Amino acid sequence: MVVRRLLAAVLLLAAGWSIVSASDKGRFTGELVVRMDDGGRKATLMQPFGYVDPEGRQWDVPANTIVDGASIPRALWSIVGSPWTGLYRKASVVHDYYCDTKDRGWRNVHKVFYDAMITEGMGIAEAKLMYGAVLYFGPKWKKELGLDGKVQLSTWQPQFDEAKFNQLRNWINTQNPSLDQIDALVQ
Image 1 (tube, rainbow, N blue to C red):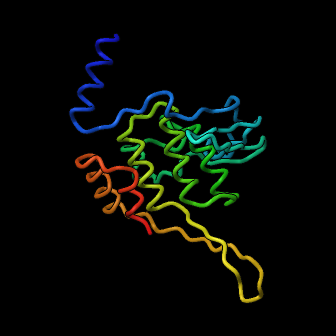
Image 2: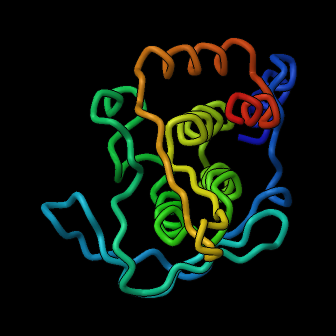
Image 3: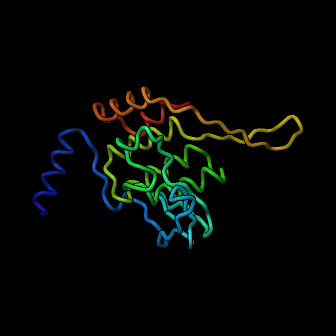
């Protein structure tokens, strides 16, 4: 078993893929306990849950939060997985909550999704694809000063484009871009 893992690590490094050690990962806090609602499409968090990212920032999600899992377009379910499958369930709960509250910047919220997927055990290439997709097609927001002098929240979300997603997937699979290169796609 150890020899197999070592060989896999050598092959990944030879192919240019980075390896994330356990010390580079964050950690989840609490146990993810949900009650499925709305025919299994939504879930209510039955107890507090959270994540501590690799930089030590706490991302708490309170009990009774309603989440919808990963917001994956149905057309991609056969490629990526459905909203409640895969090694992104826990990450999607944290991501959903902070996308709803908009308490932190959208880039940070999307980045914690990547970090939490890695912590959950997802492979780097798949996590980069999910991160790139949510960064490119996911919700965005910023606080602006309105004409009345009050701070207002401005939100927008690009429409999903399957052709652009396939370009993103091909680029990530063939070029293994860094997270900074993926970030640079969206201004």
